[in-house]
Image (cartoon, rainbow, N blue to C red):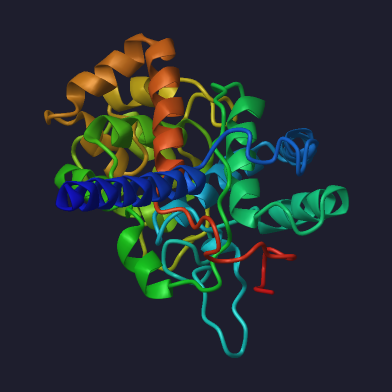
Length: 324
């Protein structure tokens, strides 16, 4: 009898321990209402900052969205991309995919300052960036979604990881699929998120090889892009062209229509519609804006779940560009 009681007690203890673990896991998950009492004006504050920035410079919406993307692909959505280099610290901003290209840092800094005035020391820069990315899409006419929050900020960054983990404009379809799969995103997620290229611009250095050397490109489109992108490397590298020739400041599904007409600006764009496994997804999004919008929103939520710092990990930075 004593033996049976001992077993029962042990089972109860194990169950309680497991229950405790489960509670900890639940607490560590991101939620949409994390700041509902600690910073009730957070969403309106971020929205106001994004609206002001995008209204004065529509391209900024794409830049903020891209910042969030590049943050999440490097050790998770932890605000590491926002850390400035110092004499003793090398961050991610000068990694190949970000150097002379990533922008929007001052917008996030301005929003962070406003949030700090409303609720000091409460909201992470990582969460502000996640919310600002959503608000940028909405501001340009795209879908809305409930952003999950509760992230904390990284105390470090990795230029090496930024160089190796962020998908490159020269990638093949299989490389893109692998790159997204490595962070838990499906092929459909990848195609939907690539649709973010319905807004924003790209530098000549990223599309030069495509407009001069590739054959799966509309001839008139290639000629048009060659006008602002000289063939010689190093000449006009920073010259910009819209990723979506039809509506670079409107979040819509014309990006996919462009791919079907062989007017994808980047090599990594056109591989999505080039006789491969993703052709049907592109065709579906081209025919159905609502399908693209819903899948994009779902993929953004999924991307926002990549390895967040929660609980006692990381910190809540006072200033986004430096650790406390």
